[in-house]
Length: 229
Image (tube, rainbow, N blue to C red; front, side):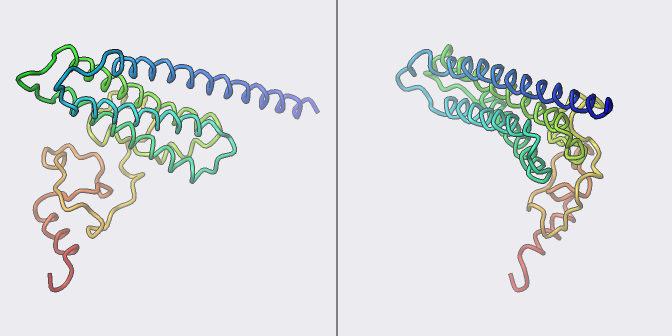
């Protein structure tokens, strides 16, 4: 029938679009990755240079590579929804890790005998890798929606929003609704206070993995210590 033929043609065009997008992602990442790697390896490390900045830049770069791999996987229409959800979460975590590495690199103090040009090169490499990582984490969400698994993304809480640094608001690819997070039992929380809650800025509600206030922290510690400890 004409309807069936039209549906087949739409499916064919969609598959072509998916392949083209996957190729574009790969090309974009490769170029950005090459730029970041070039910044790190263009010149040999100066004598006595601190390895910390190089390690942070490499951490950001390896995290970005992981996110790129995730973005490529998310474009697979045969992938199971539960697997896609795990991959999307891993992509966001890797992008966060790249961001933390970049922030640490930028704020890292210079030693008395530091090489200014080399240090700036490491910082630029870390920041560029972090930007690439965040973009590809968001591309994961776009890819999942394109393969018809949009429900996965509606349940994926934005980890950038959790840190109060998502600038996309209502246009964000991920959910900003704390209701998508499963409430955490106090015994499952980390024995640390949520710094965002202390400022009245926690966006994760009952799904936050950190204690909300000193009283809750005491209870978390008590539950984790167990009887007799």
